[in-house]
View 1 (cartoon, one colour):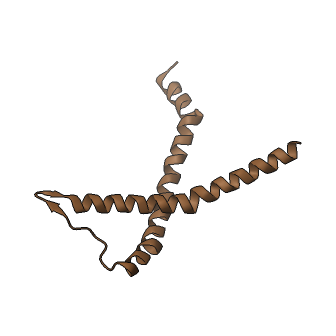
View 2 (cartoon, one colour):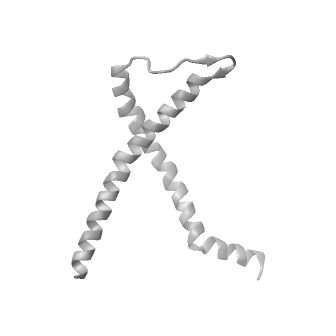
View 3 (cartoon, helix red, strand yellow):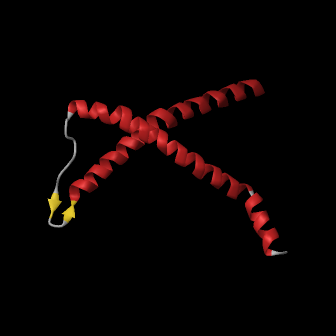
Length: 104
């Protein structure tokens, strides 16, 4: 088996193609989540707290930057969970119930 045919077999395997599609969709979806967080969630937070940044330096270490990153992570995770995961799980359960009812 030549290197080229091995490479072709590797690329045509479902795992490699699925991984490539997942990465591309994930990058595109990252833009959607960033837009929702920056365009909807962050302005709502700014209404409550005009300067939500945390400034905390311990010597040369910027702890405030780490705290801000953690807060941003949880905001992004909340947007993904409530806008995508919960509705998709509800849709999947509804489809599973309808398939079970159809098979009876």
